[in-house]
Image 1 (cartoon, rainbow, N blue to C red):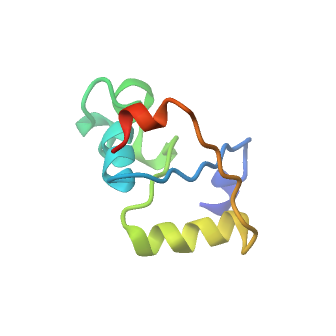
Image 2: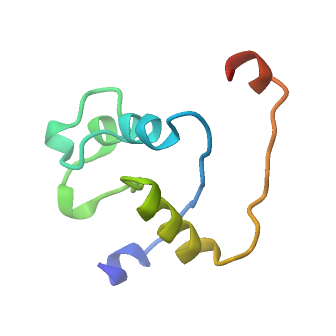
Length: 89
């Protein structure tokens, strides 16, 4: 697993916001690409479960652990978009 994960470039992002974990996991799609809904990342681009092309934390505890794994204790870059005030209550 470690060899596969490190075999190519990665983009690591932390999303925050209302229901961020649920929203991201819905966008990612089911773990098994054969069961993933069309329009999701796995549904459109995934071929095999063993060659998973994307990961999303499944809960707050795993998200916290995984953020520390990739970013350590360093503060995350905060990016605020002006449009957010129109789409997030």
